[in-house]
Image (cartoon, rainbow, N blue to C red):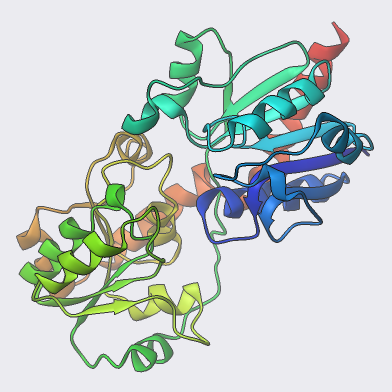
Length: 344
């Protein structure tokens, strides 16, 4: 049994990093490790505000050293991947020098146009790296850093959602309902979702908040569209309810480090329309059947006459390759290799 610290900008939220960090925390606990979460904001066992993204402060070396002193292994969730708090990242590097550390990279700066000129992750003895896709692993390798790919994993037997509860809370009748289970920010491509819904004569439901200063542009986009739009998650409605209430899931994003709704559409047995962003092609290559967002006639035909075999096939692929139940075993293998390498 080891004492493990999971460290990030923020934890406990609905963003992809928080969700996957929670899964890793669960899996490490299943392996018998004692896990403590440490973050700059959100919900964590220990809050160090100086670790938060986009702040002007950072913990001192002594503060962070004291916070991490009790732990045998530190898992860093994206804090050294994207330069959202450079000072905190550099303090973290100094504190972790010579210590067993696993960096879990969800995003890399050169994958974001406005960050492409900034420094990426560093490497050092006793450090190991995990990426959430092969694209990032190969890009790190080109820069001299070896990594292991562990894809995001999912509950392949999620609770059944309540379709009537979701639709009643949204005050939608029998019309088509398309759910976009993401935040509203530029790279999520809200106009792409609106265009699809206009052609399908469907209502669009955007679950996440507006962030990154996108509010005014977002409001203007909605005002210029004839599509009926619902926002956020009504009180008492769960994610399972949201998927059950929708007729179609849409992922119009131009870029995602992974794109959890892609797999969630499979585990919740819903059809998915998506833009083929780079990592989605990697996911689809496992054998999923999804719809191109521009193939409106095919999407419309499926919605009129759904094929249950598509749901069964997609769920089977998810079970085989992206199953949360297998995450403890996958992490155990990585940690065993880590320890073996450290003994050399």
